[in-house]
Each structure stands twice: as structure tokens, then as C-alpha cells.
Image (cartoon, rainbow, N blue to C red):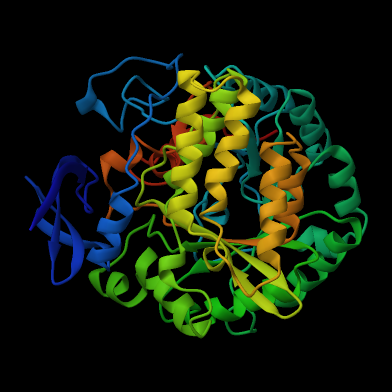
Length: 487
């Protein structure tokens, strides 16, 4: 059954070709035909029913008001930076600070060790990239993550973080393997003092077989815990290698809730060449991952507890209606990722879905936003008060005592305008999410045009994540163009 027509890539030559998303055998596939290399079919989503549930959250945004260029729609994805065909703002920006690395992992977006040259933009170049992000309209990019290679290999990392905070980024993050954080007990405090908000720690498993760097990661987490610097574990999930440890990874995060704020699983993307055998053996899609989580967590956390990113759009609408100021809009493609929250209590974990009828809750927030926009209430305070009363119906009567805690947090946030309460919510909860980045075998142009994670480059461009790492291979082009010349 045909679901939609789109465009994709020939997995052999990466030429942009017409493609179809089809449902067959209870799964969703991407089919296309290349004039030079013939027809191909590759797995897109392994659960058609879940695909259609997520499809209900489809929400196309308006992109940025100051696109970097104008281009015909058929030029995507070869006309980046962000153009008039792009439909989402930057929610999270990545800046590669270096391609140097102190590890040599076999699955790596950057493939840093294999480059044969050094890419490391100067401090002033990094500042220019940050400024491009802050100049986005109608809303500056709210978050930046410094990546690589290994960003802690930069001698000026602390100064870069300080500069990003001074330029107004509410969220500043680094993506790291943790080696230097483990070796240098003072580094965590330096990063926190500079204004770093979150450490994204590469973390593939809880055993030596899946994670040969486990001792390093445990030491890094201990040093981060001492200074209170929140960390998100980032496992690359590969079928047959570490997919049977996803439940243990979540339990590890629960045991380390004092420092771990979330787990962001990333199903492997084959950014290099891969055989059909490799794909069949190692490919894992979002539904596969969520099914494994449900089974390995004994049903305490279910795959239906997860929602796509656009589900939170009502909150953007509400804040925009209340403040009268444009807000960042979460219009990522509904099939790019999934997420939920669990509360970690002494008596065990409680998924947010056990406390709240999530769909009814979002509907209440959306109704509140629409009421504010229409100006139907006497004043904004009254509209919020009425809306919170409506939302109360979505909070389930539960045997869990933290239902009351959740309600207090919502009330303090919306009625009291105490947004520190949301920070309190995050510190009492654990984020569980997944983002499946694309490769040549499941590349969907429609997803590219909705991407909300963008790379900033030294030439002033903003490039969607899956265009930068797959597709036309912008990463390789950028790194080579701005490589350091031998001294």
C-alpha cells in the first residue's frame, strides 16, 4: 500500500531520485529506482501501526524568516544552508570544534581518525558560527552542542563555552567520549563554571563486551556528579551488539539519577558503505528499539508511552499566546524520534503516562493557547486559571503519590509563572528518548526539510543533520575545505 511519495537517494551513487513510502508485511519500506543502479527497497519503520500513530502528530512549520538562500524545491538537499524550502527552525545546533579524537570507534559519524588531516576552526570562526545561529529569525537558536571529533581536545573549549553563554544561548552542551573528564577531576568544575548546561556522554552499554570504555565512563560520571553537572547518556544501538542491553542502560541511568538526566538512544546510521547483509544484521528502527525497551523493562515502560517530538507544540503555542513573543516551534518530522519521561521514586519508576492522560493534557494546553489568542477571557490570568482547571481532568487519580507532585509543578509553572518549577520537574524525572538519523538507505527528503538539528559551518551555512552526515556528504566537504594547512 502506497503511503506517500517523496524523494530519496540511490544508496549506491547518492543521486536524488523519486521514492515511495509503502506499507508491506506490517512494516514500512522506502522504495526507489535509480536510472543507473536499478530498484531498491529498504526498511523505513518496522511497525506500520506505530508509524500511523506517529503520523497523527504531523505538523509542518514555517522555517526561519531569514533563509540563507532561495532555491527550487527539487534542488534539496544540495542547496544548503537553510533555504526557503526548509520548514523547521533550529532547536539544537551542532558545531564541530575539531576532528581530532582520542579514541577510534568503529561506528562514528565523524570517522575522525580516517581523515588524514586536521579540521579545527579558530576561535573567531566559532564565534561567527554562533552569531549566525543567534541571528536566526523569528527566534534565535536556543541551544548549541559542541561536537567533533572530541571537543575536549580543544585548549580553548572553556573560552568557547563562556562566549556562547555570553551571546545568549540558554543551553550549551558538549558531546564527549568522557576520556578527559575521567582523567582530569578539575575539568567538570571548569566546564560548569564556564556555563555548560549538559554533557552528552557516548555510552554504548553496561558490560565490557558492549562498552570497553565503561570504567572511563563511570569515572567521568563520578567527577560530573561531584560538581552537579547534568549528563545525558547517548548509546549508539546496533542490532546484535548492544540492543539486548537497552533496559540495563535505562536501569544504569536510574541508579545514577543524581547525575544522569536522560538517555538518548541513537539507532545506528550507516553513513559509510554497507552491504545488504550488514543492514539486515545490524539495522534497528525506532519501533524495534521501543519494543526491546518494553520487553527488557518488564512492561513497566511500554512502547506506547513514547510520543514524537511535535507532540509538545501546544506548549509553544501557549507560551507564545501568553507572552506575545515568537517561540521556538518543535516541528521536527514525526518519524525522526520518540521520547517520554519517567519519574524515579524510592519505590520504583513511574512513567508520566501512568499519572497523566497525555493526549488529553496536550488538548487542554492547546485549548488554553487558543483561548488566549482569541482574547475570550477577561485577562490572561483568568484564561490560565480556567485552563489549569480543565487540565486537572487529564491528571489521573493514581495510587502514586507523585501525581500530586506533578500537579503542583504544573500549577507553579503556569499560574505562578515560576519556570524554575520546570527545572525541578526535570531533576525529578528521567528523559528517555531516541533519534534515528538517516543514511543512504532510508533517506527521505521530506524528513530532511523538517530537520530541527542543524550544523553551523565556517562559511556561514546552517545544514540539516542528515544532510551534513549523509546525502551529499557535507561534513567531508566542509572539513576538507577548512582543513588546517601543515605548518
